[in-house]
Image 1 (tube, rainbow, N blue to C red):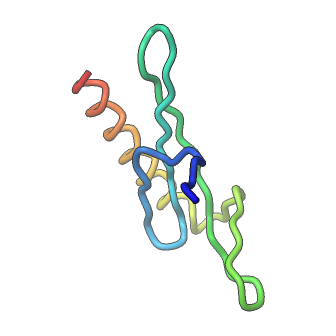
Image 2 (cartoon, rainbow, N blue to C red):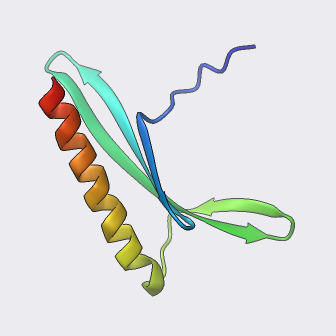
Length: 78
């Protein structure tokens, strides 16, 4: 069975922090959104959170900068 769930056009990761870039379309063309998450282990399984601690913030800034650059490059291609 094929997975029809939308996938990000780019996933950027540094350690346990991840930024996903999503491409959407409108009558004015493509536009982009970014979601961020932090992975953590609970028991034997991995979970995800959208809450960040002090030590995550600089990594988050770097990921968001990389996502911004990726989006600018995608827009320049179009």
